[in-house]
Amino acid sequence: MYETERKHIGTHSLDISPAGLTAALVLEEATEDLPYCLLRSLTDEDILSPECERCKHLWAGGCRGLTGICCFLVENLKLPVRAAAGWPLGVAVVCSSTQTRSVEAHKILNKRGFSFRSFGTGTHVKLPGPAPDKPNVYDFRTTYDQVYNDLLRKDKELYTQNGILHMLDRNKRIKPRPERFQDCRDLFDLILPCEERVYDQVVEDLNSREQETCQPVHVVNVDIQDNHEEATLGAFLICELCQCIQHTEDMENEVDELLQEFEEKSGRAFPHTVGFY
Image (cartoon, rainbow, N blue to C red):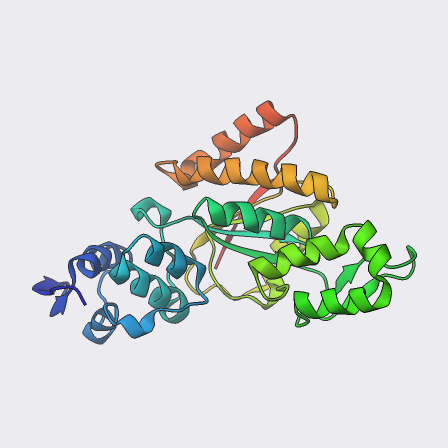
């Protein structure tokens, strides 16, 4: 652990690492006063979660104290990780089945160091089958590896030719299984649906939730056709958009102007709404 110092934060004095102190002071601004037991927990290494993308990003940067705080806040206090305080922008990209568009963006944004999750909004995962009226349908709990092996058994030549097996091989290298947005209660700064229907489903789900923290979340639709080529082009557009938003000094007041610039440059619309957790 870091060499600690005795510091007075709010109404509490505690031993805390330099990295933990920096983050605790940032948190105090957002939460006014945290109980000593919670602040003390912020420096415990056992808070680290290997499944937390924010933790992975911060750990890779060598910042143990901030990593632990990150996971503790998201999972226990349900407080935002603020990009304005130097935290990575929390991004979710959402398509229908977490197969083509959102996972391609997941691959590219992970390489750029973003805290990123990919989701679908469908009731089931659907992949093309031997005929338009015979899709392959799976539960969201089915892993990519299980789907891959199932299609390999059904018709290796067909699903190799149409690129489905290649896509699934990529997906399982990025995450174990598809995830459904409506089942996730993590907090994000930015949610990017990939088509209008998915955008409507995301907004509907956010509006149906009971507000707890009132943390704002920006939902911006980035329309991407559901094929491999457009998914790649769309992923780079999403990456550029996220990088621009990450570098704004005041995201809440600058995002509309930024989206207008993107609309003028790309010739496409980016419908935008703000929800609250």
